[in-house]
Length: 559
Ligand code: CAO
Image (cartoon, rainbow, N blue to C red; front, side):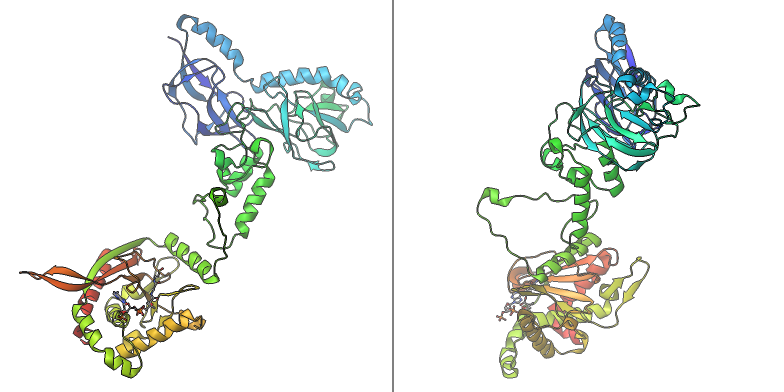
């Protein structure tokens, strides 16, 4: 039984990160099948298996930094006795190391120098001495590959190592870096065309600096020619860089990467995406085969910046994909009201910032309702109407004054609490234009009649859109009553920077055990949502219990 430990080949840089592990222990692999994907600043690349066999051990994990010679995986070579042969054969299939590539490139460069450009013929040709052709380096395949991106234009100054073009085959993507500093004099290729090793990409002038990493013709290294013309083969970059995280092979992707679950992008784009913190899965590729090009990233970032606050997802939160609903039937797109949009932003902000907990209880309002109904005639005489809400307001005011953390706000850094010595309560009002929350001030100082009149007035003006901005500010707590609408309970969202909100649902007569018999009692469902950064379960429980006691026996409101 022969085992082979696969090593990282020359990757053209000091170290690269393991961004994906393509196999698991027990997997069968073929020769050349990718084991892991490495990504450096310049390239992403698969490290292929040099043998066919079974993965016995994976020696790396995602996030590891590897350099040439690093151990990747142990493969049990298939074929038993032939294993040795298989291995040595397979070793030939291992991606060329930089040295091999350099040799190949050097030979090619030397071979082709004469027919690529006449400049190369004369090492002492001063006129031509500042021009050099940059050619396609060893790309690990004899096949022609797509030139998918030209990263420079004529007249551009480039530094050694700057990306000139991006090449891409079905399996690989690779940037071709400039072998030296200089100015791009002429482009010899166009995006979309196919190129092979040795093809001239562009002409670089003023490239007098010694191209440290490139393979050069002997003339260019001649000390007395200095900037002697040469055919510069760009840095022999690593074995084929993989463009797609999961779309090796023909892997044609079309349209949005997210839609297909594949990301098809070159290393330059991947690097840029990392710098922006953009998940490539969310970006729609407009390049060939749905490939994501730099412009797509720029467009994505621009759209995100233009988007109004609250209209979409935050960084790190996966975006909900857009759906073409018209594909399923007739649709109508309507503008949302400004109030709806502001409410949406506020709700999302609260939902994302506040760790919510909701506590439920029922208040027995049998006596309260009897009393309230007894006030009907008096209310008519006063020209008003008392609903349960004024009683709720009053009971909340009393409970808030005894439970100061519920009527507080948290400072930015979370170090301090602002305790409000006033009792201003917001009241959610459902209007045709959206949700509006007018504020009833100094609730603790007002009578039930005063509150009844104010509730009617504010609710009416809210629906007529006659509230002034000041009338919707300053609340320390909010009541959201859906009692007239229905429902058995709900979990309201805290209206930040407040720390708690009371949800009120429809009262129902329920059988309640009094110790010896069931009694029909009118039960009012209450739900208190609170910011658990400020309010603990105990605080909330005590507050809600007290509120229920106050509503259950409204004589307590005057104690
Ligand atoms: N259980 C049973 N009946 C109730 C009730 C409850 N919890 N609350 C109110 N009712 C009754 C009232 O008593 C009244 O009946 P009567 O005329 O017989 O007394 C009837 O329902 C209608 O009440 P109302 O709506 O006129 O007045 P209100 O004081 O209950 O509510 C207001 C005022 C402004 C809170 C309410 O109109 C409203 O807009 N509620 C919606 C709030 C909302 O949208 N919250 C959700 C926010 S989050 O999306």
